[in-house]
Image (cartoon, rainbow, N blue to C red; front, side, top):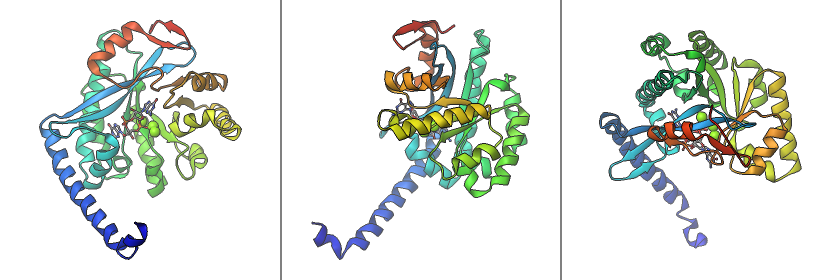
Length: 288
Ligand code: C2E
Ligand code: MG
Ligand code: MG
Ligand code: MG
């Protein structure tokens, strides 16, 4: 079959791209109506203390429930929204809603619970006026010390100086900064010394490799040790097995999130989770 196609391969390829572009154009139109018709929802995945299962906070993760197409993954529509610029609109919405959830925690007597929000590289490096963000978030009168903005290394590839300036501004407002998906970028170690961050999120691909090889486990061990030396908090992403959890504990990684503890939850289930606490390592610990 491959041989038959050989000659026309290029044509197939360009057709694929065309289809892809049409899909993206359609997607972009749909995103617009998703904002208007309130099809977005935030889910919250608990971030827990790995030694005792205490919930420290939640990462807000956007969900799109399309009336006909059903669930559309952020991994599919965020890149399109970044391309079209619709990401700004989406992120404003995310920011407002996540901060509202933070307010709900504070009013429920849990000001200690943090909220993490993913911030696109596109937003971070755009001409966006951070004063506007600052004014908007101040309207809510919440404690910024426990709001974390998660950024990725892709932002840094375009303009390191700009990103450093922007991050410093966000820190001034009071946000904590986390470097998300750490270890997947091109020069991760270099970024550890240049970026004004507080937290490193170890990428799921690392956690996945824990059971695989001696080399992988040594690399993870060293990264956790290095991060601690540099006084960054380390949060492990995508913990799925007891073995991964145990290994991370042994390495001194104190916080993490993953399906082992809990999937991302709709906000009406967050309260119940906080009441019941999270079971890890065979014991059920109180959430506080
Ligand atoms: P991320 O920020 O690295 O988020 C972690 C992703 O891993 C989430 O996928 C989460 O549901 C998933 N995950 C958590 N624990 C586990 C686990 O144990 N196993 C596995 N297999 N997966 C796990 P999700 O929600 O589909 O989000 C994918 C990406 O989309 C996020 O990666 C983030 O980059 C982006 N994203 C999500 N929400 C937003 C948002 O509000 N704004 C922006 N800019 N990006 C967002
Ligand atoms: Mg994230
Ligand atoms: Mg991540
Ligand atoms: Mg990731």
